[in-house]
Image (cartoon, rainbow, N blue to C red; front, top):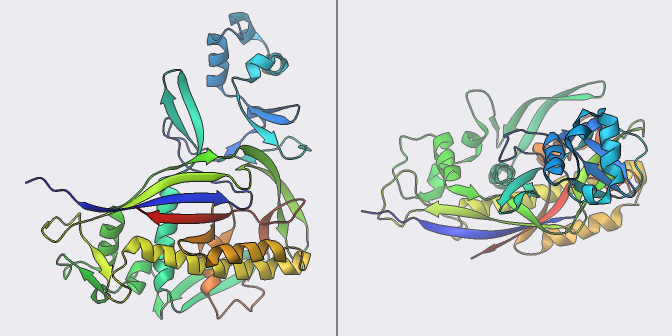
Length: 380
């Protein structure tokens, strides 16, 4: 008998609200390149051009270079390419938001490769693994009522020694999911009596399929970012390849479940008894909405100590966006420790200045923190 699982499909749109740079493993080489080295990018007019060995061979195949050019010194070869406008059109490039003051490494935005009749094309992409990762975070945040970290600070370094959620201490023997997930609070239509919470949660996420979200509106730019230290007000310059603010990515999330007649362990429904039978994906959305607003409040507190009320308008926009139905604000990519932990939910330590992060990535001229996005969802 052929099994046809039931599927809830959610259309997902991610809108960039502040310069954002995410990493990931590309779908051809398998490399996880998170930065460009100084020899991989070159500036011409108001754009930065990226040159790889594959680009050089493509220019040779296109007749923009000849065999003798390959014997040139690398600097001379690049100079020849940069002087040829037609050749530059074959290279990946991004608009400079402002003049680059020096030649340093900068963060690379993740891209997926699409194979077409005329060759291959790289598309800025938020990978499905990134989306599934934040869903796991939201899944925990949804259930996290009481959060407390044990921490210590040595100079500028913050060390999170341990975490307790809902009075359950997380350890090697007790995972974060076993601390928050209770099987008896859900209608689960398979026998899970012999499965611990970790295995049930693994089954849940095995059946959540997140597609890659590809850029469908907007352009890529290069922004100068400063990693500022709130104690010294000094900053370390870096550059992010980022979509322009307002750019949008589109993809989908699917939650597979069985209809009650199917007895396969890999396809099952797990619905809350107390929340109108919502599924785990929607629970994660609610958790991310909750965590996002808490991160915002903590970050605003940090930034007010640096720039006063200069960013109140920006944060008010985020707050309003988070209030609307079927959407929430959150932070992605290289955006700091607050979005990678549950620190923003720790009401015991948030008034302790030593607990708050000392550094934060901001746009150098506006001081707007990086990584903020708006995530909209709509069930089909």
